[in-house]
Length: 371
Image (cartoon, rainbow, N blue to C red; front, side):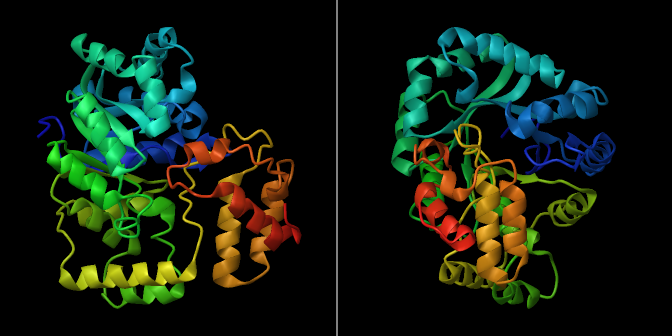
């Protein structure tokens, strides 16, 4: 499919090992070495990941230590970082410099929704990406997507030159009417577009399972919760790459243990993850993946994903820890009740969460008030 891509498991660099607020280069180097030694070579980043530290970590720990042909690198054109058409090329050139490379293997139009696509189209962003390919600075142009299957089909009709599509796919979201993972996968197949999977473990929510759900995984007698989530996503026809954001060596070792010799889920394993889905649906948890797209534009500096995590913890465990951490997360930042309901967060949320309403619920739970 793509001759330079060795295997079907990618290193997502939105969540990396951190130490004192910086990427832990020593740990990241070890993780890269182990990943490449095991025959994998696909790395994914974007300009805003880790406040810009992901790209420079790629430069210092990957590009500076390995020949360019040894790895496949994906970067993205993100709408937050260009305000006019004239900004696009300088942004792209800066991304190359920050990553320490002279071309990207894949360049994706980032986080496309109905609204963001209109913005990209107005500023001819797709045409610029295709031009970068003509110049040899990009090998393949694609998009990452967070909207309905109908919107995706419209984009692929407008731009048949798109070569690959990155979608969110995991066993909880597969049949979700808001995320529409199944329908989006079907659209990609219809138009012959290979699929990259993001959020296969839903931001860690399918790793740290509640006890009632975890028992179904434990009964399989082998394999981590992450293994079943990633293998579920990687097992679909049309999926050529499944990303995992790994932040320590233990996660790397675990992921490699079942992706070196990949096997899709069998019938018994599929039944187990379906049971986990039923548990999640019965708990009514907030389906936040902590991608943090919502925080950048918040005028009240509310750490929305952290407050939602506290709310989920309170729902799961009913102990004092959730309140303690809530107070930690709102120290010198906005509280849930500080929300002015501007809606900027909801406009960029890949999960289509009703963030303003949810913040009211969080304020009621932790501050004993309603907005």
